[in-house]
Amino acid sequence: MVDGTKMPPIAPRRRRRGPARSEAGAVIFEFFLVLPLLMSLVLGLFTGGLAYSKKISIVEAAREGARYGASLPMGTGGSAVSTWETAVKTRVVDASNGAIVAGDVCVKWVLPTGATDCNLSDPTGASNEPTVHLVKVSVTKSVSLEFFFSKRDIVLTGRLVARFERDTG
Image 1: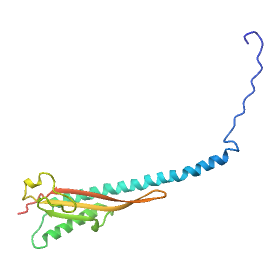
Image 2: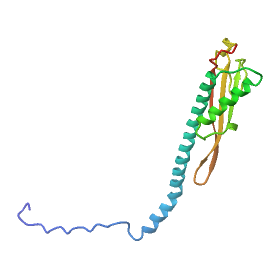
Image 3: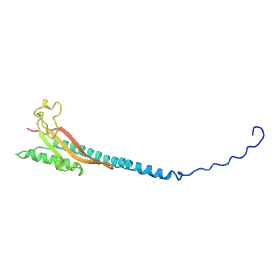
Image 4: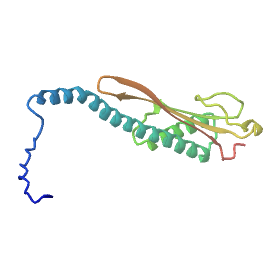
C-alpha cells in the first residue's frame, strides 16, 4: 500500500498433516530397523541395573561378614575355627538377602604370613603385627547380562580383609 493501491489477499496455505503416502512405508521400515537396537539398549540397561544391585549386595554382605567375624569370639576346642568360619559364612549369606548361597562365600581366619587365602592377599603393613589374626571374606557370584541378541556372563566379587579384634591368646 505504498502507492495507494491495495494488495490482493494472500490465500492461506494448506498444511500437510503426517507423512505423505509415499513416505508411510519408509517410516514403518525405519521404525522396525531401529526397534531391535532400542530393545537391546533397554534390556541391557535393565539387566545391568540388576547386576549392579547384586554387586552392591555382595560387597555389603562381605563387609558385614568381615565386621561380624572381627568381633565374634573364637571359642575353644579343636573345631573352634571351623565353627567360627561357619558362623561368619552364615552371617554373610543372611546379610545378602538371598543374593548368594554358602557355596559362593570363602571365609578364613589367618595370621599375616603373606599368603593368599580366599583370593585375598594380606593388606600392606599386616606383617608388622605377626601375632594379630586377620579375617578374610571373599564372595563370588556369576550373573548374566542379557542384550536383545546376546548374553554375557560376568563374575561379581566382594572381598574384604578385617583385623580380628578379639583376644586370640
